[in-house]
Image (cartoon, rainbow, N blue to C red):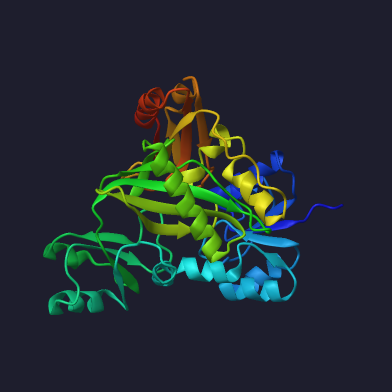
Length: 380
């Protein structure tokens, strides 16, 4: 029987790694991206087009049996048109529509009975300032733009009145701040038949002042009971929303040890990159298995892992130059992934490094050394 042809909306690093997974789970893939030199072009053919354009999505997607995504910034009307024409669109358009707008996503979490921080939606910065001035919205809070916020963009923390000057002027939500003891994430795969499998929870440590992941620890430093509770919560979210594919469920652990749902991503996620080397089945292969109707793979961890994002150095913009990579690769258990992006700028994700070891503490120590070794500057 011929393998289904898969079209990927987006050719960034996630699309590239999704395509690389076809080495272990071979299905023919192609991607749609605004740039023919997108990272995925190193692995699979890339058609030039805008993932946010319904016309481009339909024109591209109608040539495939299955269409999936690597980014939420996609045209839901285009996805719906494809589904109506008989293309299997996974994750489903309604799932993407719910999650791609943070206001809709939060409302869904509340309506579905999941514990999440209280929030209000606002049309723009002026409306949010007015709410604060009238006493309808109290400080502190976290402002998040409703669409297209990622990698630290679209998030602004307001702790005091002076922070109101830098509010993001876009449709947004303002969330009550949670007293966070730890930040966790769980990747769940859910198949066409409703089967779910969760990976072990990971612990996320964010770079101060940048709202971007600095290091990720797997397994998370939590009790067995907490790990099982986090996996159960993530599976319940996946089942409630009905996704077919991989979903990332980001969570907070508060001071009382209670789990809160922070955000969802209906696709492979930064918090699952380590699964390429650390787990029996990577999140990327799992996503392909799920959307093509195959049995899900084992999520068993083979070794402890620490992930470090490779970020563009602040103050550098242009053609990237990578420093310290060979030195890092000479260390045992170090796996460097560079995304092949044509341009770097401050704090842009240019790659990641996964450090493996039988002991998490040793992996953490090596990862900190790797983080200090590798630097991405721009050509002078």
